[in-house]
Image 1 (cartoon, helix red, strand yellow):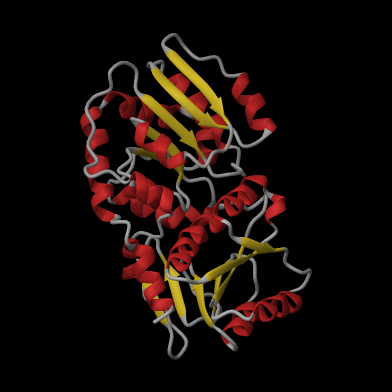
Image 2 (cartoon, rainbow, N blue to C red; image 1 turned 180 degrees about the vertical axis):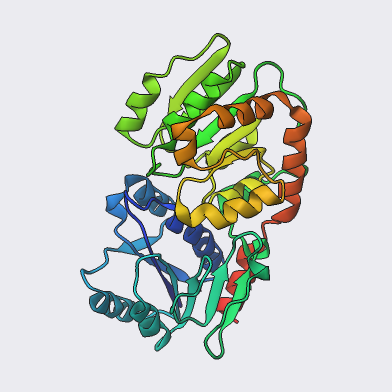
Length: 337
């Protein structure tokens, strides 16, 4: 069986976003008869290790240097290599491409990375011009957004839902590690609306759980704190409103037809977040640092989101139409022509 190596960032400080979008690609590769091996330290993030184990994907702990990591790739003798990293130097990409057909995730600028196929699945990326190495191709825009099996199973036949019977159901999650501590900040902003809701909020750390426990809901508000889960798509489909970071899961939420309120938690999300806001695809909460400093504006946006069923359904329809769930098939077809 032919093998593909997936070499991606993962860790408590950088989160699981790179791994999660690579899982979608790995699932498609496996469906096409390829063995997939991840070059990641899965044990560093138990949630990530559980995701790999659940799918039966093997992983290899990266060696200490890029040279040694390239030797690990060579020992695996792959047909192709997928690299999704903000940290690996250009020599890693050049070394991979010299021996294997290579796909590189490139959120924005290419930055000296060599590859045969570049993937920028972010909204509006198809309109950005990037200079490419000879013979390379670039797959850009939401047409190539990668969806995991779980997301595809829960994608609805139509996205609109009726007004809730009782208080709106809200789901808040900010990645597998919530590296920026967004959960307590946005939960407090929701509580400050004074409106009724039934919230399930994912707490990824002990610190987050402690901070959430200190927030006192108003009358008519229910707050349930849950652990990181692989049932996110199911929970999204059951929610009237989803509050989340404007990261790699944004496109999954659009595919699922979610009514989402996005907050920008990191600098590398700023461009995509701005485009999502400009296209009217979210209830915009702004920068996490701004919400933390002065939550009044975000609280007002959340009050609108909780109150307006028609506005939520407009977002559901628009996002659902933009992301059709077929992106990973298009990407694999380009990687393994």
